[in-house]
Amino acid sequence: MNTNLPENSNLPQKQQTSNEEVDLIVLFNYIGKGFSNLFKFIGLIFKSIFKGLIYILKPIVTYSKIILVIILISAAIGYFMDKTKPIVYSSSMLVKPYYDSKFPLINNVKYFNSLIEDGNYNDIANIFKINVEQAQKIQAIEVVQGPETETELVLEYEEFLQSTDSATASNFTYEKYLEGRDIYSSKIFEINVEALQNNIFQDLESGFNATIQNKYSQTLMDKRDKLYNIEKISINSSLDKIDSLQKVYISVLEAESKSQSRKGMTIGDGLSFEKDKSVTKEFELFNKEIDLRNQLVRLEREQLEEDVLFETVSGFQSVGNKVSKIQKKYMLILPILAFIVLYIGFALSKIIKFIKNYEG
Image (cartoon, rainbow, N blue to C red; front, side):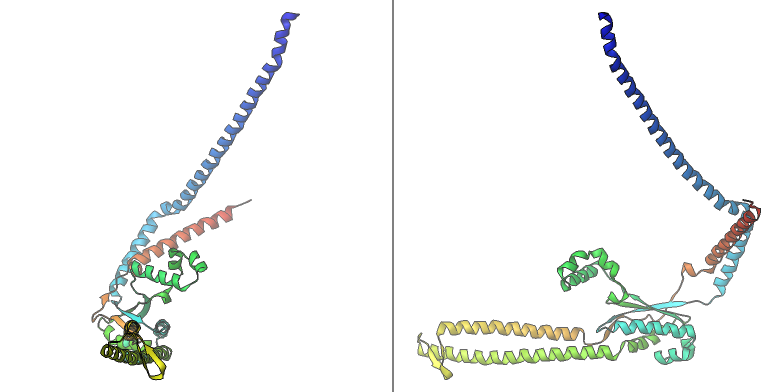
């Protein structure tokens, strides 16, 4: 009986080990089934994509000859249309508007395009001071942002940060600032004109210059000039007073020099000066005079820099360039349109056929 006790004591331990092995096998089976289902799902996705591609390409392969013939015919028609359509020329000018004159410029360009679309060439001729025949040659007018360097954009961004509070500035990154800019954010604008006549563009320049002129911008410039003049009068008045005080101090210094006295002296209204103090005061007045004259020079420079409502950075060319845009080539547009129409037609026929044969 004692010999059987050790064997009976090992039975629970063996049974526990066996149960753990069974649990591991079950766990691995679940993991294996999970991976198997995952791979089946991925395979099903690729299979569906493959079937979708087959369904998309099947009409093209089935009717490839018909599609090829119609595309070639469309390309030939487009080629002859490109050869027979009139040649379009383009030219551009760069302007730098001041005092918010960019707003009437952009609005006027929109107005000009509406006149062209409506065929109001008499109004176009009156605006640009040209004859009606020339006005009929104008095809389109566009205003876009002028060229801007990365350095100019960074400086503009820094000016924006300085003009706003710290909380707003911390939330405005450089990329976010660029995304928020629009055509009105630009300082230089490019005016593009397309016409059927290659030597008409310089005749339009004076008309564009006249459209930028407006009462609102002129009023802003007049207000600025008045403020500058007031500041100049104030600075000149201060300079006159400094000049008078300098003469007084110089006379005091001359008197002290003659008397060879360091005790000081008294002049009108009980004003007293000592030699050392009078020299210091004269130096302070001299520095103040320099500062005021620098302010005066700065005001005059600013007034000269923006003394007009706009500046023409670059005018129209005497002869325009031929417009050659790929997206306007009929030889490319017609075959693409023909292919899209044919494919939609074949797809619809398949769908209709499927619906008719469908029995639930």
